[in-house]
Image (cartoon, rainbow, N blue to C red):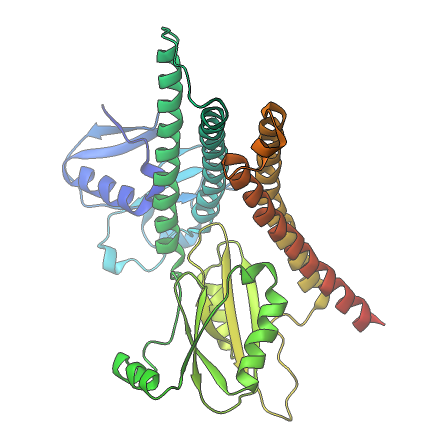
Length: 394
């Protein structure tokens, strides 16, 4: 029996599957996983050609579905809600396999946890640095007293930095894995419609218009109206940059286009396929793993009814409330955290003048205003939809 430690194996399940297949080819056949110690156990046997697949399923059963059995899949092992199966057929001959949705949801939850930890640790580091800077500003210097306890302080900050690095690595790795599993892209623009040379010619001809829009996702209904008003003026949306802040338009003819901005937590390929089949065009998809904002567009004629991405207004209202609650849960702890440290700094200040210096408290106050504005804007969006729903019901 051979034991191998792989702490981050679940961050990239496809890489782990390939690794298990390589181990089998070397005569080390996977037998079990200890998910707490993150150790894989192998039995030395004859080398074998195997294809491995990993799934995460809260409702897993002890027996594989008949469709998988008929395809030649066999169980290799289980660990909690994790399930490992293998197939001895060539990979190109396999048509049916496990569903990945469980892994995507599990990874997304892990990402949320790492985001929360990273924000908390970053806040602690910023608060300590801010208080040190504030003391230096007020007292004209900082006296450092020799003490063996400084070792504990350095160890504490080293641990915090280590947690930050681990969080950043985990978020980046899991985000990449989820994109690979669900088949979504970082963003979309129709680069095949106009080549770069034509784009340069449009700029020289004065037909190219660029607009910048920040934090539009906190008032998506206003953004929809703005895009539609641009189309009515003959400014046709061409593409959006990867981070969704720069919008490029081409001067043309006015068009009757409805825009709909939608938020999803990790949409699958079927989500995009359904809307594409309904005639909607994907103008932009955000790259964030925590939030997926998509700008949809659809052309309609003068005699046609205005298209709706969601025909049921109650569903749209529930969706908006979920968005508002999500952002409130994200930003409220940060607002409370910064307010707490602002109050502490103001209490420790000797004069009123000290409180309003361009120091750490000013930066924290700016952060409170920014995050607080986001919360107010998203709930205002929900309130506008409620008024619309009430008006339509009457």
